[in-house]
Amino acid sequence: DVKGGTMRAGIARDAPDVHFARGFTLISDLDGTLLPAPFSNGLGHVVHPPLSAGPAFAPLVELLRAGATVVAVTGSQFGTHRARFFDVIPRELRASGRVLLAVESGARLFRGCERSGEPIEDDEFQRAAFGGRRPTLEPALVDELVALGRRGLRRFYADLLTRGPALLDGLVDDAHVRAVVLDAAAAGASSDAPVSLSQDVVPRVEVREHGAAVVFVGVPSSLGSRYFGLAPARLAALVDARPTGRLCFDCVPVGVGKAAVVRFLLERGVVVPGRALCLGDRPLGNDEGLAQWARPGAWRELPADARACVGDAERKAGAGACGPQACGPVPFISVAERD
Image 1 (cartoon, rainbow, N blue to C red):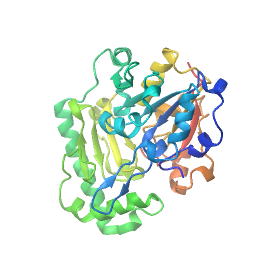
Image 2: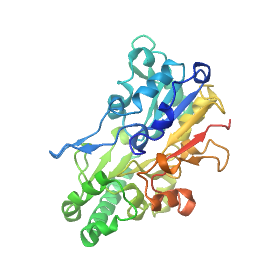
Image 3: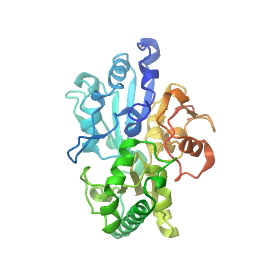
């Protein structure tokens, strides 16, 4: 199973060799990769299980105990993925400094306090990557993106009401995603999506704290570029927009990305070229910053038996049949080899 555990079987196959693990770094996306997949509890709420509820947890802890470093990089906010990823790892491993969490698509980096294991923000990363200033979107730009997202969400749900499940066929295989959008179709087509941070609200537009990002939630990622286009050239110069996760389309300030985290860790010697693996599910989407560190063309899709949940159309997209914003989920692995 790929969704909610890319490469879980490969990591868990054998106990990690201590000599191999020391100096080794695993850099991974979270949603759609290491974290268990969300599900509906049948009461109108979506449950987002923590790392400890999935098969990736035990082998990751073993890897850390053997001396490896684990870096999680997500487009989500700190609060949600602190609870789902960081806090469930044993305190002594967090205090070792070898558990890192980068959030908001690589805009902020956290590591464990050596005394308490509690997360503390890495100010050196902010200085090195962004000159000490947290990247933000200006209020007027946020307003424009909210309007753009609402138009795209409403258009998608109008199409879904007209065409029904056929709109999703061959592009969206995830049963949970199909159920969520089909249930929301009537409301999504008839009214503007609210601005909300509640994970139970679909569709919605999220405006992250201090204008860190604007996220459109409610269109399957493999269809995101069809409904959210940054046509004005001035927007494209200010905003990096990509499909993420299962139902999201992220708009972040230009210059923010997962590559900034890997570059910083390479420069600081945390990541040693040839001694790191990057895992993700969108090598041409928001995980491009993880895939790019392999030699050109050297990132590899996972074998078919390790990614049975990924549809044929999405696999073809990831093989280069579409542009960066149009690709569907394609689980991949790459070796960080470049300085």
